[in-house]
Length: 213
Image (cartoon, rainbow, N blue to C red):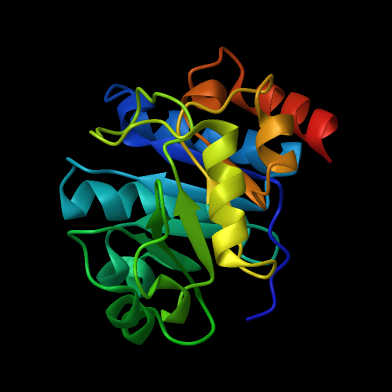
């Protein structure tokens, strides 16, 4: 598929979404992110019901136009079509990248976990558009027992993956550390807490975009 990945990949975790006023919060957030220039966004909801997930997805899709923003659904490749999203991110324990590709079709994005200290065996042969690598630094938004790899680990994974793979570095990345991670070989930095726990997420995204583009 032809999609130019941006350097910043915001990951909206449902833990930052309030239950009270949830729909209005998401509507306002989505509109502000669209105005700020977001072109790729992952929505991650590990604990919510399918009903909640699809309701959130509908609001995000309405606020972030399909023609200008790619929306990625975490885990649930089976719901991408119903959500009107543009792809799925699947990890170990979810469906395989091949199954995700079958579910979402050839024209949508499939992302998957690529590795930590080394690439997952055979991962470069999977039908995935990008590989997430890390955690780069300790993270508070996703439970993991994997040790942080730092910039050196990113550099090693880039050498192993070759020049063409899209590598999304995730885990504890801040605006201060992002330039070094990109310089080490990451194509994209995936960012959750640093953007969505800021007082003004859209304003924070703009700050990142100005600094990294």
